[in-house]
Image (cartoon, rainbow over all chains, first blue to last red; front, side, top):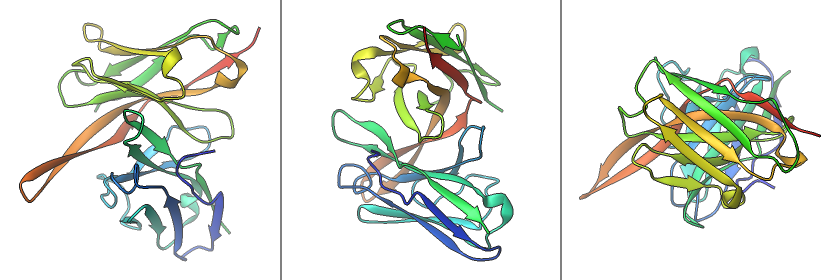
Length: 111
Length: 130
């Protein structure tokens, strides 16, 4: 049971816009920025979004992040086949002396 | 650019202590305001943060693993390490090391910091079995 709640899966056709939600509480998302990671099978996660809505250099502007209250969201616009991967949200949790918490991950399938 | 590489035994017996090392190349482990983290992922499951340390000796651990985890840094070797004791089958997973970078922003008269794991090792598989 992950501290942050994500839908297990979502799908879309090429060119569509898909969104992934990440729900937490006041000790994590409500108090700290959210990061998003993309992971392909058999590889390490890759930083996709940091500090709620900032893209690292080299990340496509088709990926965008937002946060409101104790929830965050990752949007993928102009969905492409290469976007098929697992996506994880993460936030620092201030409880119990502080620790990172992750969402359970969302599998994005391009139909 | 900075690269991370995990190393250690792929097989550990139940009740033994796992020791993994992450070697940092392409930059000094001490040359920034970084934390150095360990994360694991059981096959087919999600990510679980284990803990982190900076080169000033500050550590943070996952509360659920804290009693069994020790993370240390060896600046002379540009490495950091993970020790996880009392291993069981539930600890079987891919183990990743990662660098946490820090950013900051100013709001009114205060400065706020945020962290993100921007460099990851490829991971190493650890199986717990007798």
